[in-house]
Structures are given as structure tokens and as C-alpha cells.
Length: 540
Figure: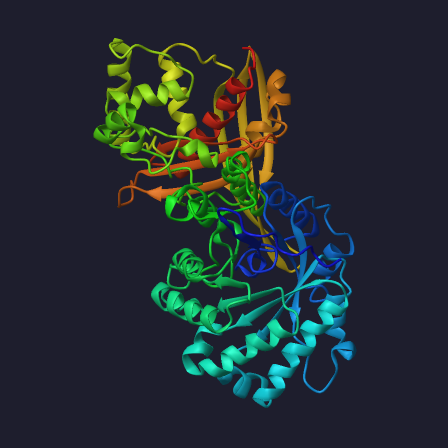
């Protein structure tokens, strides 16, 4: 059904948030959403309170077709299909590609069309007036189907700079044909924020009644700034993706845009969104959910939602944060569902250690001699190559072991790994085999497992049978593995960082250091298992 008219403006104007993660995000190199992935992401976006969720392009591929055949049960957002304006030489009713978009069970349809005369001449190779007619007839077809019509003006800013009269004629045709939103697209991501402000202001002056939107790509690293500039100039719909996914350098990052709009007075005093304060506090978890679905580590330094967005490493900074958090934090981390972190490193001061201990639930007096001893041990170990500012679980284990709180769940008596390359059906296959001998409460277990590499084989062997603790490890999995060579030469020191996760959505990092990469990996793996056993309350 066609959506209800836009509500009248109150004391603050309403901004509308349009997510394109399921389409633009799917164009990211290395990203391939399944139907279930799309459903899970759509429901998470809907729970956040977004106004529009673009599901993809019905008919463009089997995944999108299957996804639109059973739309997700959205409670807030308008489910939107994406497509192109009709092809030349046929009517909107006789264009099979457009028909699949119009027949999709959605609340809204967003059609993209050319607005740059150069592309009409060179890419479409049709008369410019014919392109304008295609836009108008396509939008009319959407309205006739009782769907809310939106028009994405592709390459609008390039088109406006080349031929403003023609670019305006394209979007005017869409608006007069019934488009509810005219979305101005910076398709190649090359327009500067000041240019966007000037052009959107000019468009608003020429079409004062047309609701404008902005769709920015991040090829100059300014998609968020471009989007905010467009809002200042009169755009009231902002399109973007979770975590800035998108082709090439990505799209405007909604995880940065949304808190900027809601927490920065320049915008919060003038505008409101459909996202509540309570839902804003879910932003970090939804950002991490997307990373979890994509099986990749979160961007540690992403604004607002990154694991290091509110991390304070230097001792001087940590002391200041302890006294006044706003000194080095522009917003309270809990407003976006994140948390303050005081990583421990060779730059650490006593306040870092105390803050990190408190975060782990360890309450020690600042004058306790164990704090000084722990700090010295951390600095010595980091001198050897350990990095606790990125391995919070290993730090917690180090501290709790110093306090005698971590049981000896198991003891590794020995381990070895072999790599065997064999002929197989005329070709070669490489098989890694790990063998681990473990003492669990006096019981010697001999585990053997294969894997797609030495570390994978050892990980599988270590967890294959851990006696009475096996049930605790059923949902444990390794999600990221990083190696850094710290010194050069044949006796190079290697640092391995392992990130693990469980079925409850918890993630933790551990570290191992050795001149032998397998030994360093095994240290990080055993720390990961020990941390999970301790956190889940396993009894020794």
C-alpha cells in the first residue's frame, strides 16, 4: 500500500533514514549475503527504528528474488524494492525487469535513473528528452501500483555541474510524476561537502516543495560530511549503510551518521529521527551483528561503535578520563551501546591497570602492592612482544592468575603438528594433522585432528576432547587470526592474536608470542579456551 503522507513538522523537523545495506552493502568486495543473512539484518535494522529498508533488486539474482518472495515481518520500516526506470522503446507495463520490481510485495519502490547528460548521451545513447520521459512514466507506474515512489537521481552532482538545467529537468519530471522523495546521488563519491551544500541549496530554491534526499559514496572519505552538508542545505532523507558497506570505498556510514544527528546539538536541536534514545544504545550491538554475519572482525577504530572508539591508552589520558570522562570523550560511550576501555600496554600507568581490573570485575585498592607488580609484569611482557591493548582476555587471565583465581583446568603435556602433501585424483592435496596430549584432572587424553592448516588442526585437536569441560566448548569458534613478525632474521619473534566467539555473541581476544609461529598460536588458543571456561563458571 502507498504510505501515509509525511507528518507535519513539529518544533523539530523530521529526518528520514533509508538503509541500503542489503543492496549497496551486497556490492562490497567479499560480501555475499544469503537469504537468511538478509532477513536477520533487515529485522535488526527495523528494531533500530529506521524508516526505510531497501531489500535489493527483485529479479536481479536468485537471492534477491527469494528474499522478496517472503518479505521479513517489519514492524516499523517501509520495505523497499530497488530497480531501474523503464527501458526505451517499450512501455512501463511492457518492461519485464520493471514488472518484477513493481510486483514485489513492498511498501515502496526506489527507481534509479540517469540525470547526467553525458551518461544519457554515451551510456544510454538515447535522446535526452526520451530519458526524461522514461523517468516520468516509470514513477507513474509505481504510483499506479499503490507503492510509494522514490527516485534516485544517479550521478546528480556531476550532472548538475555539467548541465544544471538538464539535471533539474530530470528530477522535476520525477517529482511531477508523483515521486515522494527525490534522492540526489553522489554516485562516484567525488563531490566535496561545500559543493553539495551549494547544489542542494540551489535545487531546494528551484523545487521548494520537493522532498529531497542524499545518497553519498565514500570515495574521498567524506560521505558522512557530504550527507550532513546536504541536510544543512535542505535534504530530509539520508541514505546509507551499516558500517559503511558499499562498492569501492563504501557508502555513508549510518553508524556514524545516526549518532551525529542525534547527539550533536547542531543537528539534534533542529531535527528528530525515528530512532529513540533507547534504540540508539543498541547501535553498537547491531553494528557488531553485521560483522558477525560477515564473519569478520569489527573495525576497531570506527567512530562511535568501534571497540577502540572509547579506548584510552596513555597513562596521562587515563588519569584524566578517570576524573572527568568528557575530557577525552565527546559523548558518553553508553549512549551508543559502547563501553569505555582502558587498555593496558607499555604506556600504562597505575590508573590504566586499576580501570581495566575494575572492568573485569576485579576490585583492588590503588595502594595494593599487587597492582605495581602486575604493571611491571605487563611492561616486561610487552617488551618481549606481547600486546595486551588488543588482547583483553589474555590480560584478564594474567591478572587473575596473579591473584590465584584461575584454576588449572588442564595441562598440555605435549603437542605436535605435521603437514602432508599427497597426490589425489591426479592432483595434490595438503593435509595438516595436529596431535595434543592433555592432562585433565589426572586423566591423560590423546587427541588427533586434521585441519586446513597447522593452526586449524591444533585448534581442532585441542578442543576435540577436553573431558568434563567439552560441553563448555561446544559453541566456541575461532573468528579471526592475525600474525605479526616483530623482529627480522631467521630467529624472528612472532606475535599471534586470536579472536574467538561463542554462540551468545561474546567475542574476546588472546595473544601468544614465540620465535615459533605454531607455538605462539597454541599459546593464544589455550588462553582462549581457558578464558571461556573461567567466564562460563567451569569448576576445576
